Length: 459
Image (cartoon, rainbow, N blue to C red):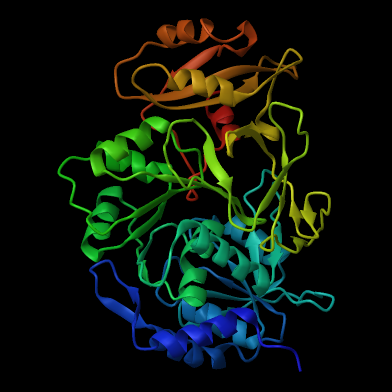
C-alpha cells in the first residue's frame, strides 16, 4: 500500500484544525467557502473523475475560481495529474499543450469535465502531481513534472521566508494557473491554512479597492499593478496590508520608492522560476538597487557557475526543484534537485541582483551587450519610469544586431536627450540607435516583458 500523499496529509491536518473557519472570500469580503466547504466540494467532484485512470492528465482552465482548491484536492485523492492552463491562451496554444501533455480531460467550468482522445502518459513508476507549462522561448510547449513533495517544499519555503501564516489573508489576483499564483495562493491555503480572496478583476483601481474592502494582509502582485497604484488619486486606506510582493518582471526602483512614499509600505522583490519555485526574496526591501532580488529563500542554495566572473548563471538546489521536463528531458538544465536558470546574476552584498539573461545578450558587431546596463543608465534620467533595451536586426541579410530601447516617462522627453545621456556613460556600441518613447510597455498575463516581441514591433 503506497503512503498517503504529503499534501493530502497537510490538508487533513488543516481541515481538523480550521474546518469551520473562512477559507475563501469574494472581493466584497463575504465568505464563499469554509475549509470544510472546500473539502465537501472536493468529495462531490470526485465521482466526476472516477472514469480517469491513475496517472491520467486533466487540464484545468477556469481562472481564479473558488472551485480551484476543491478540484485540485479531488485530483490528489484520485491520483490524477493536474495541468493548469491560463485563460488567456489562444486556442492554438491550448491545443498544442493538450496534445504534448497527453491530456485526457479538461475542466473549463468548475463542475464539468470534457473528455479528450489522448493516450495516458507512461510515467515509469513515478506519477507526478502537477505539470507546469513553461514560458520559455521555444515554439513547442513543454511542461515540468512536480510531485507533492516538491510542491509542499516550495510552499513551506515561501511561507517561512516571507513570514506568511494562517492569520494572514492572501489577495489572489495573479493567475493561480501560473507557478507564482499556484505556489503563493493555492498551496498555502491547502498546506498552511492561509485564507484567500479570489479576484478575477485585474483592473488596478478595482484591485486596490478590493484589497481595502477585504482587509487583505498579503498582496502577491506584479510591477504593473504597483506602477498603476502609484499613479492613482483618491486612494483608499490600507490599514491591514502588511506584505507587498512583486514578481514576474523586474521592479523599477522608482516605482518602489514612489509606492513607499504614497502607501508607507515597502515592496519585496521575489525571484523564482516555474522549474524550481522560489529562489530569492528581498527581505529588507530597501529598494535601492535596480534588479536586486535579495538573498536565497530558506532552504535554497544558490551557486554561481563562474564565481570569478562579474555575472554568471547559477545552480539552484532545493527540495522544491521539479523532477524534470516532459515530454523531453534536459538533465543538464533540470534534474536531480538542480535547476540552472537562463538569468545572469551578480552578487551584491548578502544577496543577488539580476543583470540580464543569456538569451537577451545583444550581438553588436561581435561585441556582447547586456541590455540591463543600458536600462540602468536610462532609469537614471529624470522622469524615466521604465526602460527596456533589446536587440533588433542591424540590416537586411546581416546576422548582427543593433541596440534599441523603449522608455515610459512621467515628463515630456526627446529621443536625442536620452541618446546624449547614454553617450556620457556608455561605450559607443552600447548606446541605442533608437529610443522609442511609449505610453506603456506591453506585458503578458504573467507580467513578463518579451524583448523578442518588442524587437518585432519596433523592427
